[in-house]
Length: 386
Image 1 (cartoon, one colour):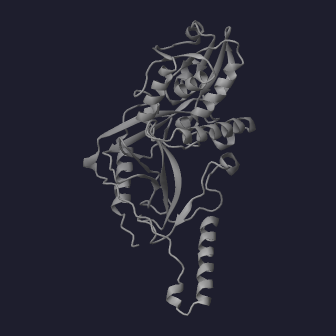
Image 2 (image 1 turned 180 degrees about the vertical axis):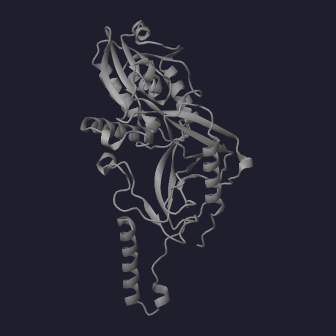
Image 3 (image 1 turned 60 degrees about the vertical axis):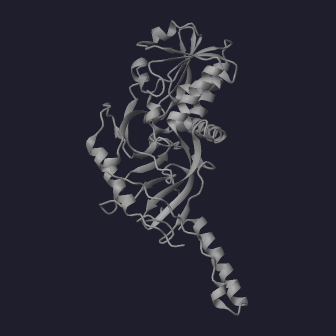
């Protein structure tokens, strides 16, 4: 049991013991029972599916690239390779890229890419007095960021543990700190950023730190989970671990980043670049590379590979406003590897990450696994007695 759950239980037991010792009516001395969690189940079924989307996460085993470089007489700043953490880390890496740019005497910058990373980088530049033009082949809603789940998941598909360096760790931690704070300040209907409860479903409590990477990287960013045991939650698993999570609704969020960028005088130019030479011909003396997977061909970064993800969507349910992951797998000891996010544009079912797969066609076997697993999870939910 987690320390928090142990302390809570111990405190309640102590209260109950003291009351019993002083009361002539033992029945009235029972310790107060924590209210159980009741949640509306998702109406998960194949006939309720309205769409399936596919996105390719830009992954590097060594993690994202954030560094200044030269492109002829221009300052080139790389800011790409965020894996599945682009929505989570973009405000932080965007600010750090803008800091590199402020070392140049000019205040005109070109941002290449119009997803979460490009838009937030452009906004961070504008906040520092830059005249910014975004050059991109596609704009929201036709960018990879629109295909994300999306929540504050700063370690998702990001880096292989043995590839990390102290310098990269320091960049990561600072980016995560900045982004976490910025997303909190954006909470509200305008940007589609909000808080909701996340439930991790399991039959066994984890031992030690909840994250596979050193806990120091996310110290202060991950709220400790509250453990609900049998009879305290509606899921079929023995335990449900609850923690608050930031939810980002991509369609609302990205559209309003575009509007803010344009209100601040920014311009968007639809253009494809085939070589660094074409970037060198731009009028802006500062170029910020936020091309994601595009950096593989544009700059020859062969470490970049796609992590293919797909989401299957059902109509929204007003009574469902939580996120959950995991469940009871058909094979003991296995992991379902699934997650559900309730959003205004639908009930989002995910859990796919296929390394090195470039196709944008839905994988029917993966779709079946994810949908059938969620049907099993939600059909097994039951009301909890209060």
